[in-house]
Image 1 (cartoon, one colour):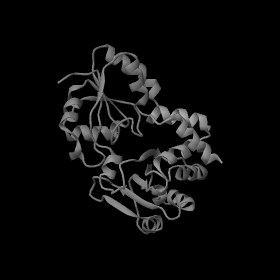
Image 2 (spheres, helix red, strand yellow):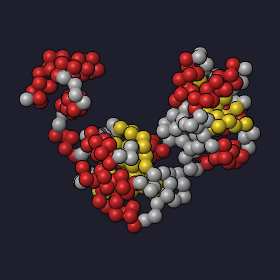
Image 3 (tube, helix red, strand yellow):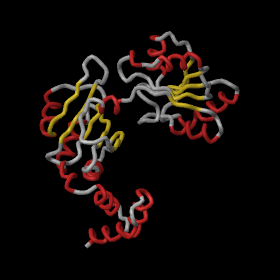
Image 4 (cartoon, helix red, strand yellow):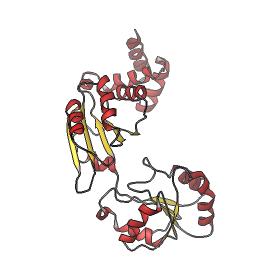
Length: 272
């Protein structure tokens, strides 16, 4: 098996049995593991009898750790990066160091593994495969409303905390009162819960049931998307962002190989 200088290693999001054999092998073979919280990671390492030393690497010290990690790799040692749960760089630290390592010519790879979004979506029936992952929503009501309206023609996935989920859904309900919602919590754990229902019913359910654990939530696309062609939808999105008809014709023509004049005429028609 090819060896790398640096490994991005997913860890289980709840059930320790979900770790891969390769992940265990890599974590045992490297010289140092960069992790968000050594107390959390140590429980995982102890469970699988992994004796590799850890160094903290989280969003508050990412920039400070860069030189230390690069020096470690320059000395010939190998490292792995893990997050507390799930896949690094997916709403977790890692982006800064990965960028630096590539710029400095180090070899790195990522292992496949646990991810809350994919685990959740594997249990949710959808009209098509397209979706947009937002990560954590902003806390501002106006920003949440803007995002909810902007993604009304796409399935929108986001993370939310248990103490904010009801408030967030109530804000979304104000701008999209008939929308369908799905959420998952405690994924892969004993008390895993998946709920798919109209937003009113989901809010009622959450108010009546004490919830813990991070939520993965999906706001389903509006049914009326079928009344608008995908082509028209893309034009409307770009117009809402302030692009001119000329700009839109160039962008869509380059991306999809569509005749530029056809796009321009369609965009002009929608401005009238």
